[in-house]
Length: 278
Image 1 (cartoon, rainbow, N blue to C red):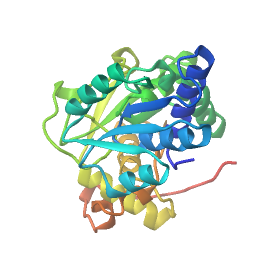
Image 2 (cartoon, helix red, strand yellow; image 1 turned 90 degrees about the horizontal axis):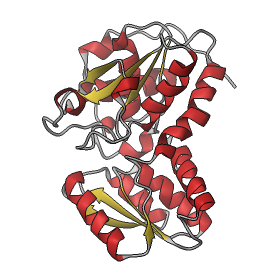
Image 3 (cartoon, rainbow, N blue to C red; image 1 turned 90 degrees about the vertical axis):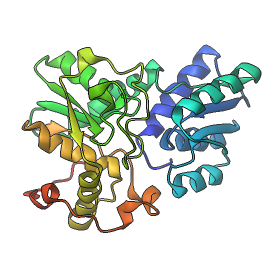
Image 4 (cartoon, rainbow, N blue to C red; image 1 turned 180 degrees about the vertical axis):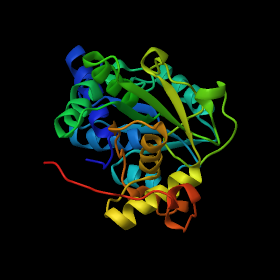
């Protein structure tokens, strides 16, 4: 509905909340997010009749902010995720709201175990040797890893993070980066090291240049995280590595994705074949 993989996560969380009675008809949904999950909750909230309040860092892209408003969401801005987690928690304690808590909600992971992973398996012409995904909530990576490792423990799982942050590597972010949706200042509760074989650091300039290359040469409108995920597959050194293009490029027209970015790494990559699967 909103153009990102987060739609299936939001649907999974809301469906379970309905089944357990945690979310009632017309009840407000309140969530802290870098944008895409917020968009998904706003879209589903509009369809199902729930007002939605989104707590989001002010430095996220203009397109995300505008789209949330178009879906009827209310925005509360802050200067950091750390600040907003506290503000959202305080709001939830004083209001009748449903809080999805995407960074710790197990139905985030289950959405990918039940849908994303089987879709990849069905589409793959060859054996999957590795799965690769950027870590925001880590739901995609852990979901793919659980599914494929459950069938073959030899399958590798690699987490992708911005080199400028290296939160997973060092336990604390080194600084700001331009891959929105990854490395949101905390190591999420869903991130289970038992299902991760390694961490791949991708420079944000390389991720942007890769997303641009994919669009220009393959006609696929991927977001910056898509460029990072593709590079994660390349840098993993594994044959038959699978990942996802989690988002489209339309939410980043006001960012450096719309400006020429050079990268020696990306220039060295050649697409040798592409096929589509229905």
